[in-house]
Length: 81
Image (tube, rainbow, N blue to C red; front, side, top):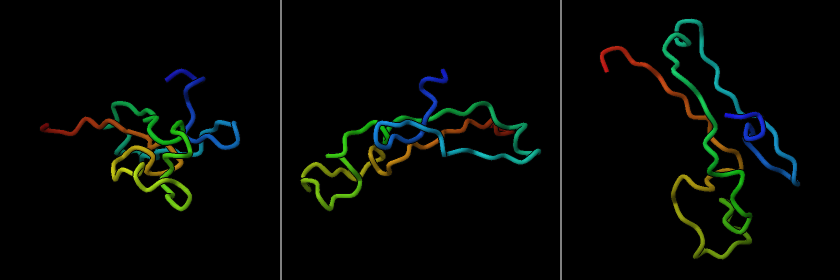
């Protein structure tokens, strides 16, 4: 992912990267890649996971806007798969 798109949260107009994935020495040999899945931080606040002040009809129990941080997705090369 290009550096300009490498962020996992947006707050007050500032984007940053707080979320990481750690792999130990043995597991790191199985990692095929990692990236940020932009499904939360760029969503408008009216779709926020916190429905306290939002219209209830806009809430959907899916992955999108389930947090205020974007998840990190990791690919693994699993033996025998």
